[in-house]
Amino acid sequence: MDSQITLQELNSLIQENLQISFPDQIWVTAEIGELKVNRNGHCYIELVAKDKNTDTIVARSRATIWAWQFRFIQPYFETTTGQALTSGINVLVSVTVEFHNVYGLSLNIKDIDPAYTLGDMARKRQQVIDRLTKEGIFDMNRELEFPEIPSRIAIISSPTAAGYQDFMNQLTSNRAGYQFYTKLFEATMQGNNCSVSITEALDFVYAYEDLFDVVVIIRGGGSQMDLSCFDDYELSAHIAQFPIPVLTGIGHEKDESVADMVAFQKLKTPTAVAEFLIERMENTEDHVNELEQFFIKEVNELLSREKQRVEDATRLFKPLIKSNIERSSYRLGNLASRVKPLIGDIIEQERFTLSNQSEKLKNLSLSFFKDSKNKLQELTSETVYINKITNQISLQNLTEKEQKLKHLSARTFENELHKIDWLERNKKLIDPKNIMKRGFSITKKNGKAIKNASQLDDGDTIENVFYKGKVESVVKKG
Image (spheres, rainbow, N blue to C red):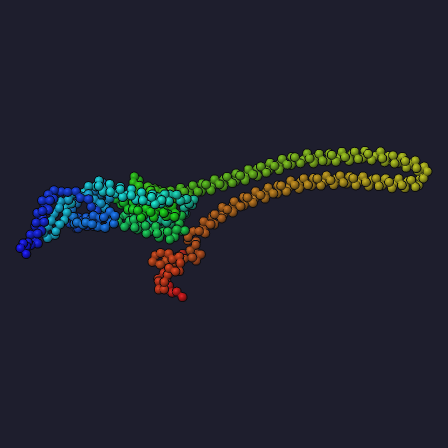
């Protein structure tokens, strides 16, 4: 070969040409692939460019923010965007191109434009909203029917979060003394793993969805930049499609995340979530009290109406009975007036006949008089019997109606009391603690509930959770 140069000479040429080609700072758009800050405060970044269709990396370059600049760039960026300067975000950076003979090509970042990142975040957020809407799941959770008695609550939060403690204090010390069953499903509520952790917690709640009335996702205050994970598509899609209502209280009043938008109800703080649940219980109690008062009022009005009907019927029957008695007396009087002259005529005839046949006619007259007297007594007895039967029938009908009315009112009131008693007993029966007290247990494998024996193999270690305590055992299939 006629011409040869050393590697050092080649690198020097590259360095000279780069200085000629890029004498000034230039603005470059890229995604932060990795970001590390050493103990001296220097920030080392790997910038990448990805294919829009395949998301594969098509370019990569090392970049550095020296400590004296990083101390100003980082807080300004995070305060302006509300987003941590971390991997996975798109940035517009002002860089100088540098080439070192030993360390090769690198970019020295002089400034970062937060406006570009804000625009990119807003674009991605809108893309998530548009995708959820296009898939028809954006309103699914908000269209669920909220339970009248939301007493069984699945809580997704960090156990050490101040917001979780505030929520529990507000819930357990409620003014009406309502009893709530709560179960904490631990999750990371900030940082890069936030959305994945909450999604996994939702999956775990889903395995026991029949045991809960509502899910609450709560966290304490925290900085604005901690909210970015709540705009994640996977997390928002899980919330939107969850089969029971989801309430969010992530500690920010002004900002609304996509997770807030798709949840059944967004509330400002964990304390507000607890107050919302207490108010729902109060509304249900008020409704039950209103139904009770309405029922009592209806029963009283029914009893009053029936009592009035009885009184009206009594007033109506009295003149009818009196009229019947008067008519019967009148008929008896007429009958007596007709009988008297007949008896007189007969007596006169008999007296005339007696003059000729004294003894015979005397006997016949006495016999006839006795028969007439018996007929009169029978007629009188018949009249008295008719009046007695008439009075008995009227009084019997009146008594039967009164008894039917009392029986109907008592049975109606008793049925409603049974319904209320049944609701109370049913509430206790479906309490998960009472279910496990009766001997039921939950079988888990690797922390997940087992619903079918086909999910187990020989030698698997399973955990049985009882009302008190838990045991581990090894599966042995026959």
